[in-house]
Amino acid sequence: MSKSTVPTSVIRRLPRYYRFLGELENQGALRISSRELSERMGSTASQIRQDFNCFGCFGQQGYGYNIKELREKIGNILGVNAISPMILLGAGNLGKAIATHIDFEKRGCRLIGIFDSNPDVQGRIIGELEVKSTDLLEEFCKTEKPIAAVLCIPKTETAAAAAQLISYGIRAFWNFSHYDLKFEHSDIIVESVHLGDSLMTLAFGLHKITGESDSGR
Amino acid sequence: MSKSTVPTSVIRRLPRYYRFLGELENQGALRISSRELSERMGSTASQIRQDFNCFGCFGQQGYGYNIKELREKIGNILGVNAISPMILLGAGNLGKAIATHIDFEKRGCRLIGIFDSNPDVQGRIIGELEVKSTDLLEEFCKTEKPIAAVLCIPKTETAAAAAQLISYGIRAFWNFSHYDLKFEHSDIIVESVHLGDSLMTLAFGLHKITGESDSGR
Image 1 (cartoon, rainbow over the protein chains, first blue to last red):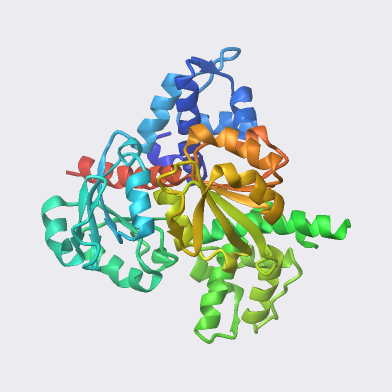
Image 2 (image 1 turned 180 degrees about the vertical axis):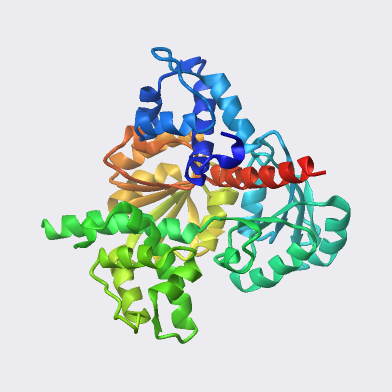
């Protein structure tokens, strides 16, 4: 099965496998069985075998998987060595945190420009990049040809900014705004991070335990 | 079906439904059919009907769902009105962004304390909270009784910090470090945000389109 035919559900699990295998490699481990890996990852051994079979990685009966080999294979599927140039829009607290906290290059990307419409933050240095005015976006995209953009801008500005960026050649978004880009631009790659949704899921869990202890009193 | 028996897979979709329904309400909409909702959410009508049936919300044939009612029901299940007190550990760029960018109260939580072990950031004001020394954690937890903690600390510090916090009564973590807490503390609620994994998923999509255009040249 080629990389383009690996199911999306499997693809979404690959970064986590990749991360775990990296940890194991750092610890000096050479091989791991699907059973051990499944215990570590809170999955089942058969799920793991199925996932890896998708891209032709078969463990050896009684020996398990070669960690280095498996990690390389997953890294190649994910494209971690094919560096894609990205820009970031919105140099507020969140944008700054993303730009400084995330190791883009380890994940197949390179941050080559940061832009903000607010003159107060333009000129500031974040990481190794100077925040530029959004007026310079078109020219920058023409010459530097970024292919993706991180959106750390308010929801109300996202639709217009995305349309503009798409016209400048951007084909993918890492979207932190709560605006649903995929609906309008079905041909564009969108990976959304909804931090609020994540917090709500946690709140649900909390509500359950506090509700239970309340009723148990 | 009570809230505790709604399947986890459905629960994970509820924040998104809740968000969409809120947008519709803001736009003045009163009712929506499962078909319309599914188109908007990139899902199927039958999936949506199934999900809502789980908690006894049935659309009316030909009329669809009452948006306000449905949103309230979902909000109650998620516990958005049962405010849980939380603390945040790690007032670096990411911690600062989380503390200022996220509307905790809208999601059933309240941020009541921010802590950092670094004296350089202690005393700074983030939002309306002063960053406190982690030396004060035990005392603070005793008196203020936070139930959950946001972890924006380095991976290497996460295991020790989590164990300490659990001993102080913390029962849930919103975990931004790449440390796998669930493995050691199966009785604790953990909601992890792996930003790096998300970026890798985007990079995979990019790798696919750039790879395709390369081979097409």
